[in-house]
Image 1 (cartoon, helix red, strand yellow):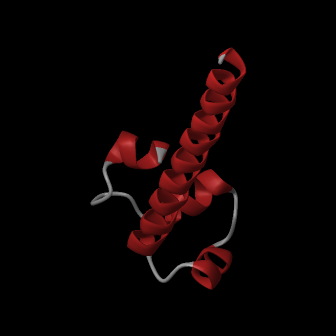
Image 2 (image 1 turned 60 degrees about the horizontal axis):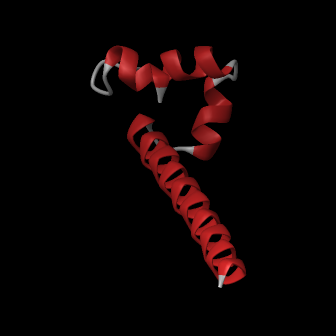
Length: 69
């Protein structure tokens, strides 16, 4: 995500990604078809993580309000 913020997805290359991740291109292509799929998977994982944190927060707040009653 930092690379996208630094350079933009259009100019970002698979080489940039693999150098930052310290993996070889073969490893990258074993997991992703291209940089767009990598970005899509990463965004989906980030959104899922945010939703999970939000759900945990809501659960904590509901327990807190029940204890106050």
